[in-house]
Image (cartoon, rainbow, N blue to C red):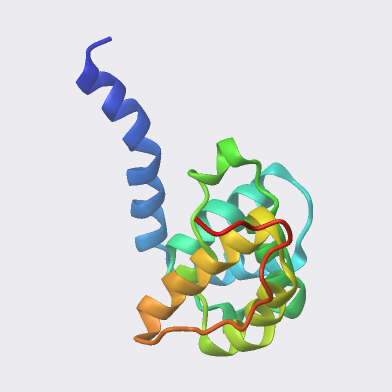
Length: 145
């Protein structure tokens, strides 16, 4: 396999995901919201929540509290080796979602969860044209460089 074949093999899923997400009909968009809000634990639901949903123009405001929890849970608990395949909810996060869900979580988070939430806040802040400030206590056992 040539290097360009490998590149196409790796990049193709992202292109397909973006194509599908960008061309959802209103009916498909409504069905996607239903699936996310149901938060069942099927492989399809997991894929839609962690990979496809953040690539759409669907706002977190359209999700139920249960759907928002599922979105955050999948984002925060995706194994590291799959994390690069999952899109950040920051791409669809509303300001309300950030203030009501993400900031309270970020204040209490540590380790990997904290870093992921900070990245989510940066991505959402870029979209919203603002910087989300956190008044976080220092992480335990953190050393200054």
